[in-house]
Image (cartoon, rainbow, N blue to C red):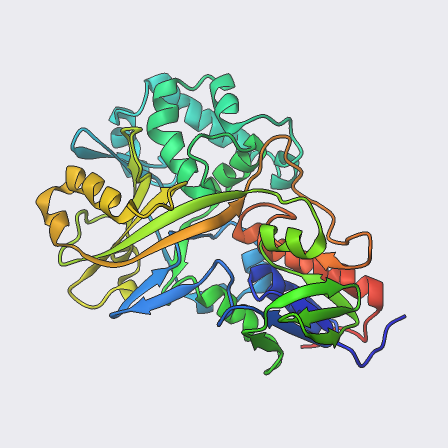
Length: 417
């Protein structure tokens, strides 16, 4: 059916492309990855600036994601976990909203936090219990509406939606208005209840690096921008055509739509501003949520509290996330907001880098189909978080699922590696 001497061509070395390539390699199929950038990871990348480790945007790994355990050596990642819950900042102080089921010591602070009524907080416990009783796959198949409507229908007040769910979900799903699918919200909330939010000690880059290390040397080509694809070839930089046994487009949604002629799934943007501080503004490992509803910063993390390896000794890394904000003024806006929280000391923080990520995640408006086909009608293949869920789990699962489908389509010589 195909020329066995030709490898499968994978376009993109993000999590989906790497996961697909690993599945192919383990099945005994030769693979070549063509990546336009200068390293692996796609949107999951880390930079090193003046001794600080900066993830490109505020990113975390949810340890309850099953695909992490299937594809990675979790011990080798040396994960550093946030404390469960959040510190909601309002009226000049932070209120701990914890998970009393996992941290009973946070029961009193959670009960008294000014984020909503006692009935709202009881409803969080009910929601947690209900979601943990249902398999995540079934959660993705349930009735669908927007997250905001689903929360209101569950009886949550506007107060707790604005002060707690909006900054929490807005930060994770880049959805400040809570217009995306409640199916994805249900899964994320379940994952937060089941496991930790964490980062590798070496930065989020450690995740794609570990996937890439499972592949043969020399199979990833950087600076190779694919401009055209067919079912049996890819064209690099408009002129260099390379034959392939099969072609997998494993790019982000907008690029995949362009290369494959598919409908664009839409984009959710995010800005992130990284500061170096001589002293940490808080001493906890909790993410800080904007409880005012004004923003534009929705959440802040003192990454050096969570992972001391992210900053040089005696200094601290503060990262502010601004979902939906990619304009020129986000550094100024972030600093002004944090000055209102923590005073004039913020003026002395050194600006390390600002990230403006136009495509941070694909949109997931209801009705949301979490498992889209990975084979295009003309024989090409596609994977990415836009084919499953907009998450690390979705990208890695999509890649592995696509790899298995390619194996079934072209045949294989048996598991190895």
